Length: 252
Image (cartoon, rainbow, N blue to C red):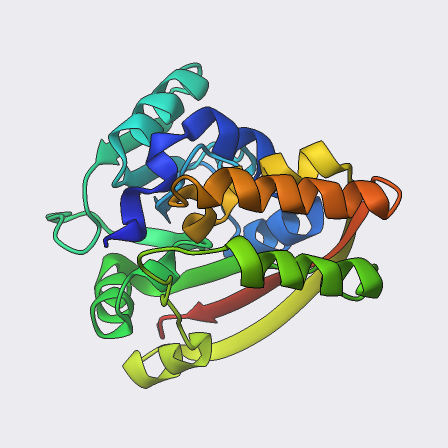
């Protein structure tokens, strides 16, 4: 199964429940790249644009490439007021950018869908000398804040979570240095979320790729089991988020 368009089937739910990033992350990238008018930025796979507006607001020439047609339509409507907003509904791996070059290429939890031997060299070619690649994502810890509940939820997974295809996309971000990039730096910021049972079920159903593919009767049994476990634990699921940023450069 090709998971790449899974989220595109539920753009409204995905937009509502996907965790947001933090202003500190955006400010760091914008400061490092001196992004603004006269500079060009490319976002790979923006989804519904959770990580788009801060870069648009700099006045840079912004381009997104988005594989999902529903996501692309969602983005066009969401950011239509920005004269510097442009989007292509296409596949980054095969799209011909012709002579376009960028000061910044960035990915918010999307570049891991692209094989590194395709993604990293293509980004390198698209960047201007001295240009920046920023890759960021959220790592969510659902165990530390609720260990007893976490163990109960694992039992629900064992009993009811059956999917036809496992999600296996993984990327070692440090490998970017094998493709000509230099000066790789890592930064992180911490956030905390607290969700009710219904909110946690909606979060799983709207942001976790394997969960979206669950079929009946497993789907109902699984989500009912998750909801009941959280309700027994006081109707509260605490999630500790680490917002991680890998930022690197193409040499001058």
